[in-house]
Image 1 (tube, rainbow, N blue to C red):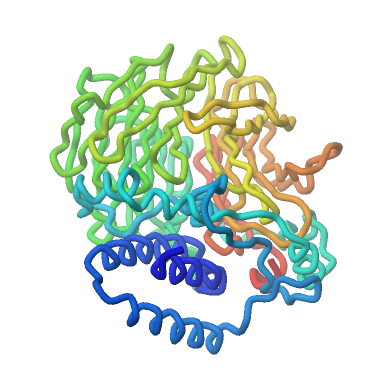
Image 2 (tube, rainbow, N blue to C red):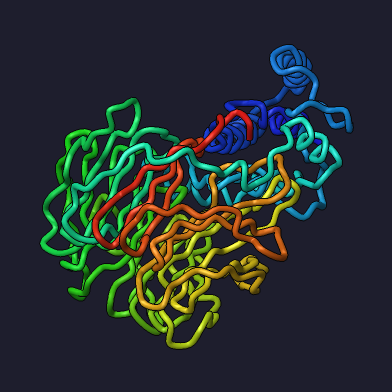
Length: 484
């Protein structure tokens, strides 16, 4: 193994200790380190200095974080992975995307050549040189974490605050990235709101007004400085969060209602929309124009879409019950349709959410799907082009409403892993995806209309849920985040 690869492996080994409450930062850090180490190795003539650097860095990291523990007697910081060199099954991307992180810090200014270099250049064999495998240390870590069950871990003390600033159904609610306090909502009353939930008192910071019809979906940019929204008025709007003003209005190319949107995880200058005329479109935020080759058709209204953590696979769900997967060229925005899978013919899909890891034990890429068949479905992602295999279903009431779900953002050392969904019966449901029987571990009651969306903040101390009457409830969880 080259010296620079040894440095990378050393950094990866200690990466889990950096910012334990901020997995997205760790993702950005290790990816950037990979790029810089490889670039420097290409021009370095004398390897002696790099060997000396490796020795000194190992001493500093050991001094700062202590020696990583992999024995059964390890502390809560024990890591359930080992590093191997070459001929392995998994890339560094898989290690880096430990949660739902979907980020790269050169988001808007990354050049086409840099993106190609990141995935197609000589860096590729570096990614392939590291794998993550389960070890007995995970059991030790769970024992150190305490004896709480998953249902106890997701118990709530009650309502932290109730927002009612919207006069029609709230279609989506999302906390800002890596943010405990700011949450935004979109509504069919044609507005969006940005709220501050902590410290108290909780307040509405600003209302974003400009859409001429209901706002169907929105998403925060990686840096939280921009919000992208789409609407039944056939436009996408980019909002300056700090100023509370509209930066740009982008009209749909065929004048169709826009129903869903997402930023490309590695390049926030690129975003995707789905419309009511069965089109998926990849757009350039700077120019407001569609990328060449960045459009494709599905079988019905595009109700939902989501990327995998690498930004190379895109899934869409339509009104006819089909999920399509696409390969996305990160550099050019070109879409290539790869797979089609029917969840339930004729029953609309309303939400998609992808996750690379379900628990700390092993990588298990999954797609969470809401469909109007009274159940929430979990699919295993079985191939590099987005093929799906049904893994499990969970009962929720959904026959016609646009209900959404999400993975819990943090992975616990405890046995089990949790997903959350809204429901037409006005409840919020928590399901343990590892349980074979009685998977529902908690249920929150408080809404007076179908619960349309749910979202945790970054440390899971607060949960937001919204409903078809325009109400948003902020729930406060028992215990402390540090117990996870």
